Length: 105
Image (cartoon, rainbow, N blue to C red; front, side, top):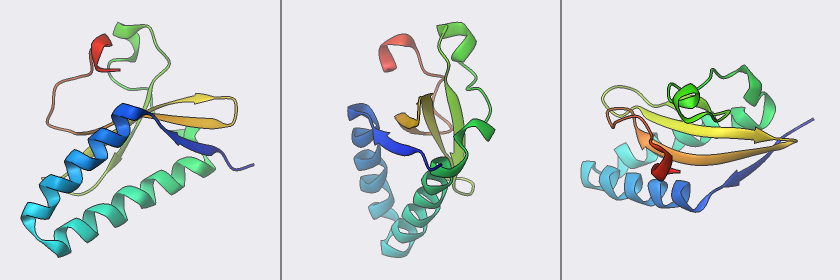
């Protein structure tokens, strides 16, 4: 059964921020970034449970998972949780950024 993808408000803002940055690198870079990112998100629809626990999950006491998308130096972390048959994407952040804190969610 396919999972439903739900982007939280902060994840949508992260995507806009990522697109703004990638536009600075040119149209081709933006298209590659989008294609890789949405390919990873489509994989979440099929088997989100195959992705590992996010590094900050234990510290925050939350069931968070992470999927990585992109190629260096433009690797992004897709932080999500699974609720029934819904994948809630909480954040989409560049992998070089600090771990998430409670106020980042």
